[in-house]
Length: 341
Image (cartoon, rainbow, N blue to C red):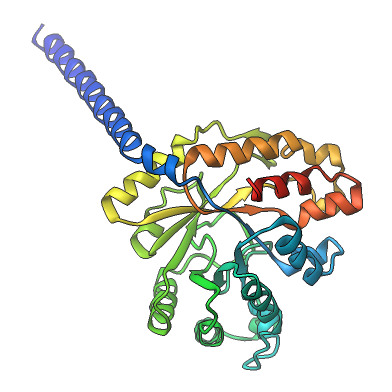
């Protein structure tokens, strides 16, 4: 009898603890939402785009033309750009920054702002954009070359007034995506210290918005950048939606702001289809499974509801490809409307 009573008391206390914790967490969420709601309403999110010349070339575009159309026709004034290692140091210790230089110069002429990503792992597949000569080096020499490249890049570009922040690596803690070596926290911390020693602008660290806690970025960065995906594809699950409300992002961003004083922004909003095969190997019907024109607008509304800012859209090169190669202008036109709203 005594054991039965003890068991009942234990279950009762356990249930009471769960209920109490749930109520506290719920009240905390309500408090955060209430304290931040007015500020969000007064300051709706700014939209920008991530642009990669390699993606434009993959889609048979002239990268300079695509970039200028984004500036002049769509009206983009916030960009996330990357100084790709394989492009700017194709030959060891011989630097050629002409590709990133023309992007920065075009942005400067129109008073656009740039978050400039540096490092080995940067946006777009295969994530790690290694120069071919890197394969001949041992691990210690790779680290030395990587730090030298980061130094050269920041020293070369830090004089641009268009650059408002540096992004160091891209989703450096994400193990399940990309052709990259395992995460190296020590090397990442060295890169961060190096960038901060060379320039005073904020440093952004990015993480998967859905597949991580963001805690690593919050502990290291000045600004946390997260991805925001709505419908994706994996071989295991096929096409599936993330069943998350905008508050999934909002509450965590508010919590980190409260605990660390650090801001969270969306560095990658899904505005390009996530496909089983590559874009050029897929049909329009395939693409519409994860990003139709209706879903494009839903994703924009979703990002607005989350309230994080700025929001960098992923897929700008694809919008132009859909318009010019597939006679589907809806995405390009929707982007123009979004940037003029």
